[in-house]
Length: 299
Image (cartoon, rainbow, N blue to C red; front, side, top):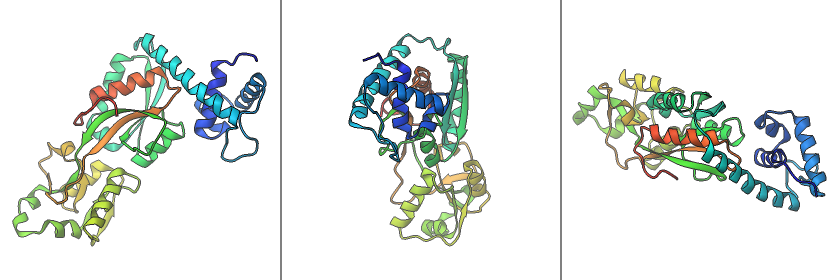
């Protein structure tokens, strides 16, 4: 059997991981014909078929499953070795980072400046989006590193804990100070300013409302957290927001409700294995610059 090269292992792994030749080509910065040629070379060198022909989604043969198992371990060890010897100042390339707006408004600037300082030749491509879309971009290979609320259902990813952020109903401060004459639940029921579907706060908000059997009289959607907070401060309604993010804003105040919301756990995460050593280093810089309440360094 002729020897397989790293490019063969990477090609087979990313086809399997992303589900198509086209997605693997985009991930590896090559063309789909090149990906097809590499698969043919792999199968010629090992003497058997790796992917079942005509199957959608792409399905591994028994030999293909064995190959991917070895590829995962070999590529992970290669990247671990590269990380050990890599000098951050010498690292080059463009890393695509996806994050949610909570992070973008809170500590993304500190993180970005630190990456520029430690890894001056790395270019960041930052994409701010809702949680659901950011996870999808990570899983389909269009994002290298995601800074997001954790999703324990996602497998085959490396996670670094970014800590936790509390969330609570927020209302105008002057209104909260007159709450002796108002009922908190009636205030929430009256008008809610909601972030977009697909955001983690959207899901937690409606889970809590269902538990309380509350159907808001008026529900207004806004896809920007900073604008939502401004609308709350102007008296347009209440919203589920991270109170620590707006701690310095005297116009907003947290509402005390029961049951209280659980804190959100955030992670810096990337696909495993076959990661760029630079992605791991940048994930660690995200942990170091996180403004959340930090817990363990690895989730």
